[in-house]
Length: 374
Image (tube, rainbow, N blue to C red; front, top):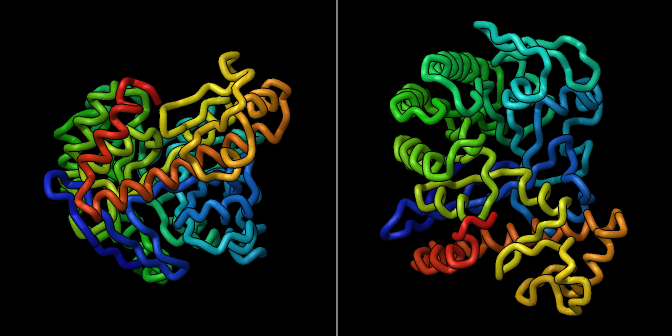
């Protein structure tokens, strides 16, 4: 994997660049749709190809449980299994271990947990998580880390940082000794909850190892927006300029823009697809609740400025009808539109940085989504 910065904003840390992998080029800043189990919920792979995202994200925990390592090995990896040819990033599954398991025991060398599917007992170590991602065939792999809830006291947050750094070192050594490091890149993850001192310390200790990229984890987990922004900015400022910076789990337009202003290159979130399935749609004029009676007789398109298939083909009234009638097509159309919006939004932001108009783009979207809307 290679990364280069192409253009920088003159007044902020925003930048545009590209990550080059064996499976394709990723233009940054980039939003990655989440295909947790090898599928973007409510869409086909053909839809995802048509939307033309440079990279998607899948999850090691879920793929490890279903379909399982042996099935993926037999298929020749996730790319062959789901018939997606572009780059795939896989999360380590650490967040899911802590959030989904009814039983989770943190050990010095990893974590023991029960499957949320059948209650069976499993164990993840820094090394085994990478071995699973090798079988998946991930272009970018994430280390095993310990993500904490919010709120959490500083003592617990420090313990999580110590484990995260120790596991990152174990992961880096295993990756260097046993992997094709050009074909499968490895990113570290910064933890520290909302404690600035811990975040700085975690960044500095992880920077001692030359990971190809660095992610910011443990934010957007319930903390107040202003605190999220403060800690995100502090953390991003400590990470290397010459490596991709990845803000995990952030998918709202304004929080993406704020993180880009602080120098973030990569994002993922289930939020755009989840709210689509619940009837909330992003548009150039703000969010639209397609369930609302206000659009029952609206014969206009969802977003006149959008070029997606849904906006070119259907009225708000029809989309409301499908949703209210419980038609599966409502989930498909809503999801397709929201992901089209996200891709178009990121294209515009990249172009604005390259053209010296990032402040203009920021202010434009702040006027639409900066009032506390999604």
